[in-house]
Length: 144
Ligand SMILES: [Zn+2]
Ligand SMILES: [Zn+2]
Image (cartoon, rainbow, N blue to C red; front, side, top):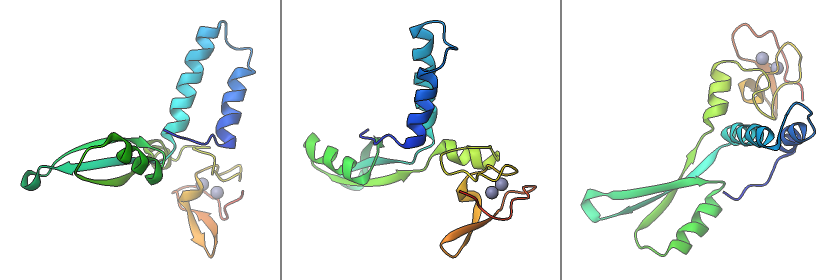
């Protein structure tokens, strides 16, 4: 996975590295691995699909990749024949966060203190976003 660290992801890791809460490097390492896993679970990914074998449509899928471009380069490198394509893998973490109305689910959350839900659950208004569509949330306008 060729990823570009995002500002909010870097901040989450720096918070662990600068914390005094960890008794040993090993405990901190465990916390870092868990945090990185959760952060990456909030991203969308791409899987590379491969089909061969004619009628029976046999195939193998690989992933995740960070982009179609990365998956395509990988397909070119592995040197096997057949038909490749990609499919998007939407973030299971973000879906769950939205389904359970988690606060601060990812970097794009509404800063309205009564809301703090994902930007994606705010209705579209022109090029911006309007009210939060989650039931029981009083937020009337998405705030960055
Ligand atoms: Zn909300
Ligand atoms: Zn909101």
